[in-house]
Amino acid sequence: MAEVLGLVRSRNRGAILTSYEELHLLAVKLSNYTKARPVACEGACYLVMDGLKRIVAQGIDLLEALMGLEFLKQLETRG
Image (tube, rainbow, N blue to C red; front, side, top):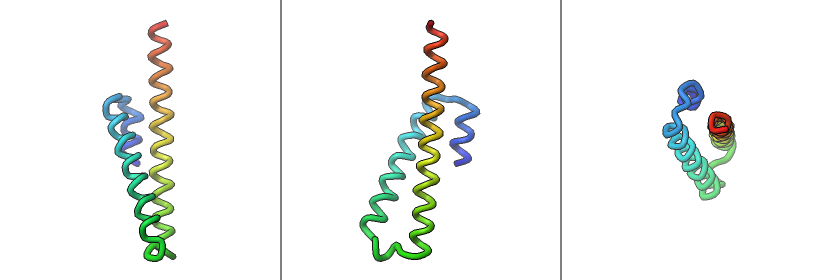
């Protein structure tokens, strides 16, 4: 998450897109893991995996908002 916050400060478009893709891949891996191992991922493991999925989702949301702001900024400078 610290990397995502650094991207907010830097506004490096390439890095933002790369991180966005990486977070989506991580979200898919976490989802596949919990689906493939429902019995092994009970109790404390479920809490950890659920927390990780929420953190990744929040990072994705933040990057999506940042990309939207950058898009609006581009529109303003072109207009």
